[in-house]
Image 1 (cartoon, rainbow, N blue to C red):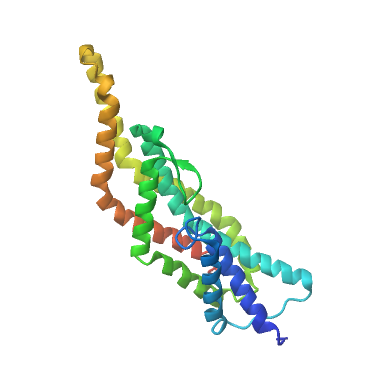
Image 2 (cartoon, rainbow, N blue to C red):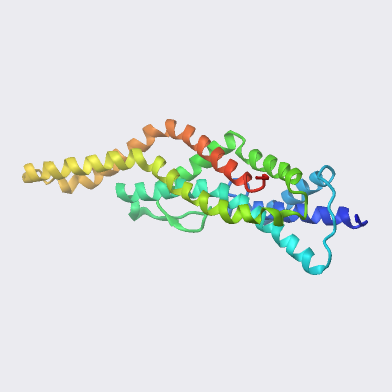
Length: 254
């Protein structure tokens, strides 16, 4: 039966699901966004949703209450992490392409992830983030999570744990697809350039092509990335929306 504490408990479950999302989402959270801002956003959205989401039934016993709360956090974490795999794929592409271009010596600390990464990985990550914000990608996640409460009312996230166990590993494979698609233009050009310089060095050793090959590789690689940014913008948008749809499918009924 519904108890007087149901409204407060429903607000708590909504807050837990949103907190999990903001803790793992790259476009809404990440290390670039202070914890105070994320907590304030979670509280504000929770109060707005509490008035429209279906009522919650209080679980029987403290153990069931704790399990329901943990499931809400886990579901939010899974949704945010699945969507964030897109950004990890973009940064992986920049990391691999940057090393092949000779930019591995200029590694720096990425404030979004805290890891050492190349300049190209940082550049592509920022470009993807701006494209996602430009196409309202952050609102896609928030709107989808708000809709999830009509599919999974507060306190019933345990019903989605089976989809989480299957869906998150499946989405992880898309990370490598994203990395290959984004890095492919630069990798192909650099590979052909290296083959050409190797053949030229073999045919005319007196040119000492390997002495200037390092600089040529960087210039050609960076130029290729610059010329491909226009096409990558559409790939960033489509790739993120695809990953966001996979993330929200964790909440949808089968």
